[in-house]
Length: 188
Image 1 (cartoon, helix red, strand yellow):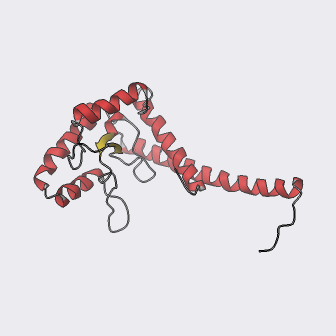
Image 2 (image 1 turned 90 degrees about the vertical axis):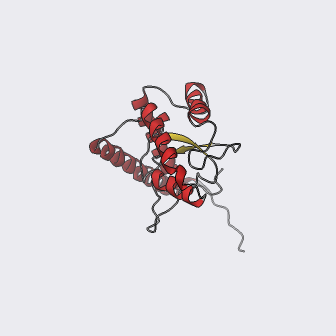
Image 3 (image 1 turned 30 degrees about the vertical axis):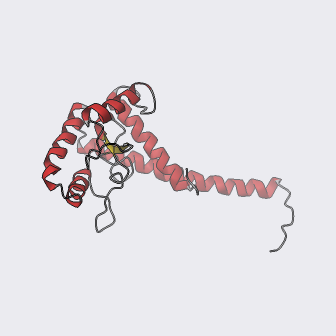
């Protein structure tokens, strides 16, 4: 639960909703991982494909979260789609950052996790398992034009939501000034 909500929070939520709808467009159906067929897909991927283990570190017995391989945000524009999710423990669900503060991609993150745990010998097998899941779940192989279209629309949506939030505040101030009788506030 957010402690402080900003227009950026609303904008990011709108972008994720858009990426969900694009993912569902390619999937051909809803992908609600909280119920129905989407939840069954998630549980199958978690329990059968990855044997209830974190896709990155292989830990068993932890509560596993959904990790979007291509991040589900404005930096990578990963779609909410069965081919873009893997089970992930809480520790591994915090993506590493590059020197320029950008996030690593999932392969770099996997390599770092394996190195840190002294399991570099398992990197290749875990990478292959993730790549098979991407392919088997039918994640769309978007060409550069499709990726660009998603990026342009998501960025436009983000900026429009932020702008509308600012305009709404200004409108409220004008209405408040015109119609609300202000009581004197005590000086503190």
